Image 1: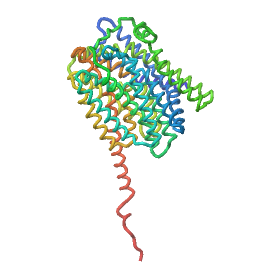
Image 2: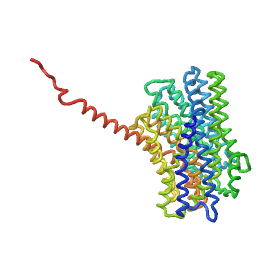
Image 3: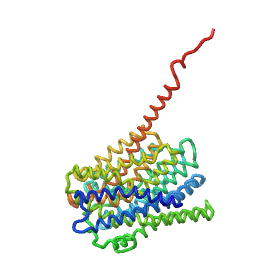
Length: 522
């Protein structure tokens, strides 16, 4: 047990320290100073680092014995249900309720205000619309696995529908400015609370259903769940929303202790991470215990292990989100504002470097890579996946900086990107297609929304003013979700080529020209 805690601390330290190191390098090289006269922001950053490391370590320990276990139990049980209504009801309820308070969504919903005529379309309506989209597509994803349907076909069909809606919105001069936020909605949905559960749910259903494609079907549900919010947000904006002016929230001048306390507990500035994470986890616990009472009937010691795991998850995620809100978001804005004064090429290189380490800081990524390595029996190494994801996210944030600097429409990036991805699905092995879309949803978690998004928004405001924020500041989360999809699919293509080459060499070694000759004995 002691080694488990030490390994979790070491793993989370290796994830967080590189990001903090980059921010400090930017400060001390004068590329993007985070403080001027005193060292308060440096102290804030270092305290934030310690809290992030502790929070991520506790989350990793807790998620493996709570969220993942609940997903496995319910996934395997739901796939045995003969009553299809029960499958649909619980799949929808779980997808909806866990999304309603997904921390990443709460972070982003605070960054955008949408007004519909005289009616204020508040965060509750926005998050509710996104949650309904997730619930529906979790049901579709679970039913696809149970019914042995092709994942590639469903991805192609729903992405075609998505871009039809996007095309309609793009024709409207006022609404088209919100296109980047529509794509962001899909990326922020699958965050630190949602991913471990949905991954395990898909794996549980696939394991019980069995068949020759059971391993491939273990993945893909996160990617499917990411499509729903894009469609539901597009419909929400298409039928109700118009766009107001973007307003900049002033940076708080509280002392360091008060910043963390304000981010942790309810206050005038928000509900606090303790309440937000409680709201995120409580629906899962209630739904699971209801289902357990009706169908599973697990022994008490198993339920106690789950509750202890949820306690670790709760404390860890609360600390992690507290640190992102108190330290990483304000420092991200400062870095973006000050980085804007540098040469364009310098900005792009710095953003690429930030992207390389951002993925390591996302809690859900560690859950995904661990599960991929386990299900593939170690054939797909965690380090290979992390490198592929890291390069993909680095390229994504560099593209986001280019989009912000040169005011490029997001459609010029995402349409070719998803078109290439759809073509690669016909070349790439099924398991890599499923893992790729899951990776895209997983890569855009709390660190992306709380640090990278404020950085790009700060860069946009500094270069072009607040009127450009919706169109060119938002969209970075969507790009972070897109690029890992392409990176993992390309990895799959290369592995296929390598496997075929190895098989060709083996055949040449095993068989020779003499093997084809017939020897006659007189």
